[in-house]
Image (tube, rainbow, N blue to C red; front, side):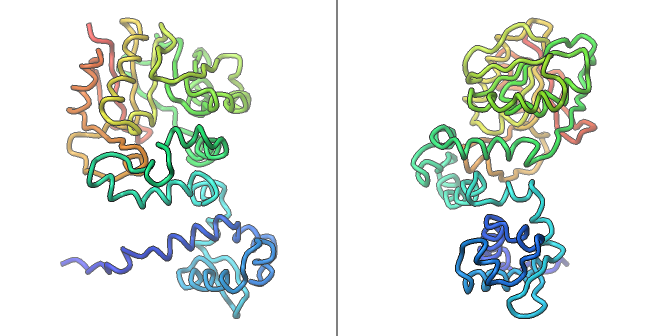
Length: 327
């Protein structure tokens, strides 16, 4: 017999919003710098002291802060995590995390229709919204890059190994974190980063920091357009999970068109084992994206001109699917 779960706690909206507010205001950083009185914290953050006091006392009851005497605060064990840049990126309501948080209010539309309700809330579909707000686009790039997710694990086991792979095209590779790791750990490899112009424009620093700038070039374009042709491997990492099936097939078809007969298309994200539980993700709410089972993906890949050669969990922990152009 399992313990009963408190439904009121599950339905609580107060705690997650209070956490996001103090993260947005950088309260943990101010405390870390020595400001502990709530009136001083309110002054440096530019907010109402009484309202801030209510929020912080509430979070002290949750272990985020410690209030040793009324109006004085230190960081609790949980609150120390708010100092981490990765945590702040994911909680800052002034950046892309604010869009993510408010997008959950569109969940009824997604459940009723299977499609994103993002435009109902923000006036434009997600990608168009980023195009209209460069600051949000930059925040999104930071969130999905090393700033928000750390250095990616570049261990990918291929059916025939890496010896014949000379060039990798990272399709929708953001600011190049994964491609940089692939090149850094394989000195004989060359790379091409494909993503929207505003995103690849920010990749130079990533390549320079990894010491691979001389072996990589960036191509600013949509991955729905023809891709650079003739590479040995086309990588789709955390791309297909953002799209419904029609767009997934179109992206895979572009890879199949660009790859030579001996080329490979490697997919990380957007495909799950046949027996995987049906998990709700933010991509589904934001974009109407989905995760296909291997059986479902096999049919989509076949329609796009690809054959699945292997699918399974790898040492990195990622579920990886390897395809080849159909004969």
